[in-house]
Amino acid sequence: MRIVLVGPPGAGKGTQAAFLAKNLSIPHISTGDLFRANISQGTELGLRAKSYMDAGQLVPDEVTIGMARDRMQQPDAVGGFLLDGFPRNVAQAEALDEMLREADIKIDAVLDLEVPEDEVVKRIAGRRICRNDSAHVFHVTYNPPAAEGVCDVCGGELYQRDDDREDTVRRRLEVYHTQTEPIIDYYKAQGLVTTVSAMGKVADVTKRAMSALPGS
Image (cartoon, helix red, strand yellow):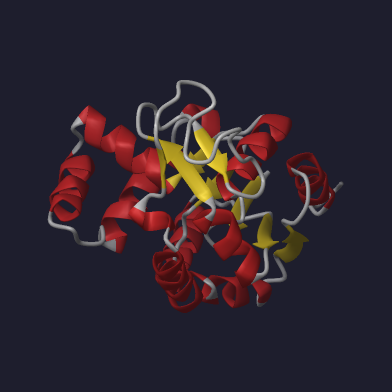
């Protein structure tokens, strides 16, 4: 099973990707993991990506595509994979199709995680992170600390990251709408897209996503 997972920031793609990949026994391939692995290993693509990232620039499509190609050719991905964050635009989707055609394989399904924009803002802008340990994450609505602004685990100060501020979240959504959302229409033309509501409990979203896959 070869799956592309699409959705706006705050849709829970990373969480759902991990559960789906485990249930299907296929590797979860995320853009962030590709970058981190290539940079830590000092690959040529990793060094190129790091030079752009250090300059505050977007990593060019050809670098991201090269990393994805290398990862999908590894033995654990021969039987399938779940892509999260790649492709991020139509050019990358076209390149992915070309790669797969060369290997005589194809994408089986594209799952579009759907969340209302106001809910995305609420989810992300409500996050609070502990200054002592970024693994301690709270939410002002969904998982509030016992004492406002104080980490339940270690007593550290909770703060809102700049990336989580509402104005920043809305800019990220604009980028998603202009750059990434068009790939949904691209894959709809191939009859591959199923829209999955990402509202509600994580387990319920996973169940809906699993049911949306071919052969389920």
